[in-house]
Image (cartoon, rainbow, N blue to C red):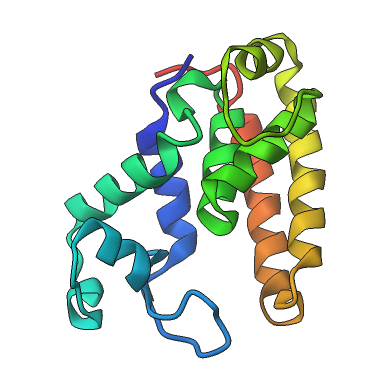
Length: 172
């Protein structure tokens, strides 16, 4: 369907920002949206200092292998790929796939197999984007940290929808 990873990664990085080690954030130390725990899965024994100085190459690789591939971004229509990938960054790839499956009316098991991909292919792209937006907002509102971070998550969802609608039907 698309090879939209660079455009989707650009969207994510524009919203993830730089260094953060907010004690209210369950993710802990984070750089460009990558937590220390995630970075240590990529580079065993990595420190906060190393995370703070992570290379652009490592950032792209972690997002590609840890988030884009698990949501099968290359197999999704343009726009739906962004909605699923970016939500996967904030909520986890499995949750993102489950929300996508729910949006297209198939069993939400977190695995994008042939049945899910066929349903996605038959669904309206703009309709799926709208359904995903609603499901994603509901998820964010269910989190105990919504009072602290919810405004940002909802603003990001608004931006994600606008960007996804612009990407619709475009392949690269």
